[in-house]
Image 1 (cartoon, rainbow, N blue to C red):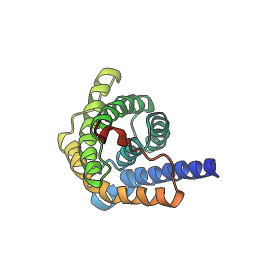
Image 2 (tube, rainbow, N blue to C red; image 1 turned 90 degrees about the vertical axis):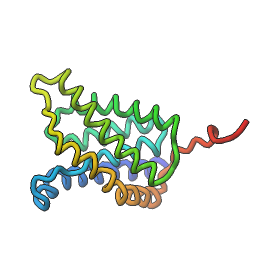
Image 3 (spheres, rainbow, N blue to C red; image 1 turned 120 degrees about the vertical axis):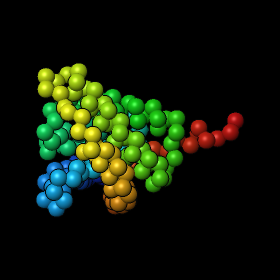
Image 4 (cartoon, rainbow, N blue to C red; image 1 turned 135 degrees about the vertical axis):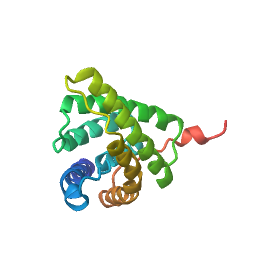
Length: 179
């Protein structure tokens, strides 16, 4: 039963991130024209990084990143390289400053969207023969819209965890105790 719940939880996250990626790449442009969409898939990845311990969250992040990259024009190698560095920077931040709350999640998505774009720009310049352009207004729009859309996504993922009774939520209370 325990393995079945984990598989259902992971399968649900994969379907959710595929839906969000499809919404971001297709439906968004049909409804709002050329306004850059928020990084909806990044919100899910941020939640997984925050809610799970390192070995489990790294595997989940790579599975979700491969699913999200299927609807992206970015190469899988560049995408996974960026997410590798992104993951460890967020882990370092989480290990030093962690509060389980919606406001923390919103701030992490604001900083995470900024960090993702910086890492993507740097990685693209170093690895690709045709690196990405700066696209300042598109990237700023994504950075500002991602935290706004992270609010309903936070509650949806929380609800999914309650439905599937997802185990091992990260909360290291030892660092908050006085010695």
